[in-house]
Image (cartoon, rainbow, N blue to C red; front, side, top):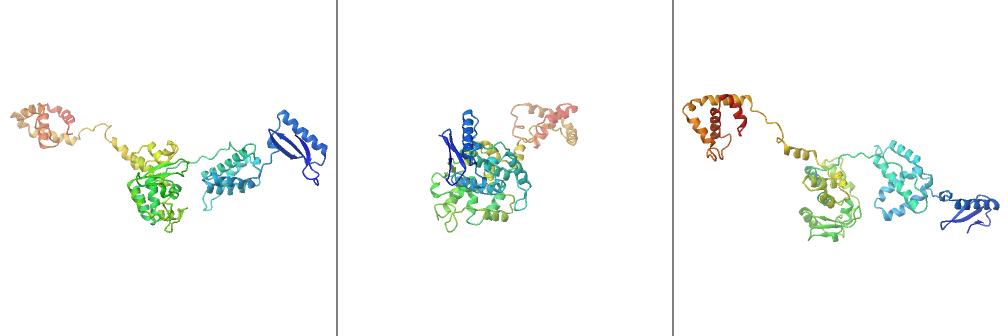
Length: 420
């Protein structure tokens, strides 16, 4: 039922009330004249009948600064990347805080991208495209939820494109670097690093691991809280099985401080270890890259690596499991010498053969060489079978072959002789 009314008796402003698709809508006419308010109500009802009514015209869209807390309350219960969102919202609120959600247009977002690229980080570096992409992804998610929660008619920035992020080579450690890193860790942090290198588990999966998820009999770990919310079994090698048996049980969590307190952040300990080991440009997550890369270089197929690491697609495994240049070089050398033009004997070798042939020509006149050559032609000749091509017996047989043929064909004999 549609009507005009006053919200308060002491207020002279008239309001109109009507229903659209089962939803009650109230809006102010901003007039003290009842007849003007009635004409406004009739106009609205006409738009509804003719199908020209748009709800966003009257819906009250909150400002981004007001909406941020609503979003964060939801994110605390549903998102694992809450810390990343808190960082993103600080920048988004500074740029769009005073704007209503319905007033955030693609032009404003493009201007934001340009401005952020020109800014500097607290350490004086450039703001990377990936950082800006995370902020824009957060903004898009916020507006999409506002649409679901009936606070916004539609997300106007849905089509805004993100920056292309360059894909550099994945950083992973060699065996020598890994040994240096393990040596540089303190006693309580070292088991965490060894676990990451031997299992490929993510940092949060390691820090939240509890003893009831450790199966010593089957040598495996049962992970429940994973990044993609899909449980998986992690097999344990002998190194990990022995390591876990040596860790004292101070708490329900496997990896704790000496006081039994669970670790929440190991950034400082990891930075100290990498600095002492002389390893640069390396993050904790790169230990997972190291694990996957060495599995692939050892011949493990990508599908197995994907299942062990808990990745959703083979493409992600190929992104992580890059091979080292040394490993590719060794693979290429397996065909070395197989497909090439065989070189002819050196001129110096030919000259030496002619000299040797000339030296034993007198034996040919005595019939010794011809008899020796005939013996070479017999199958399974004991003088040939098992002899070395460069041994004294074969050398004499080879000269016999040369003398049996005409001297001008010596080059042909040399090129076909298996010892050359």
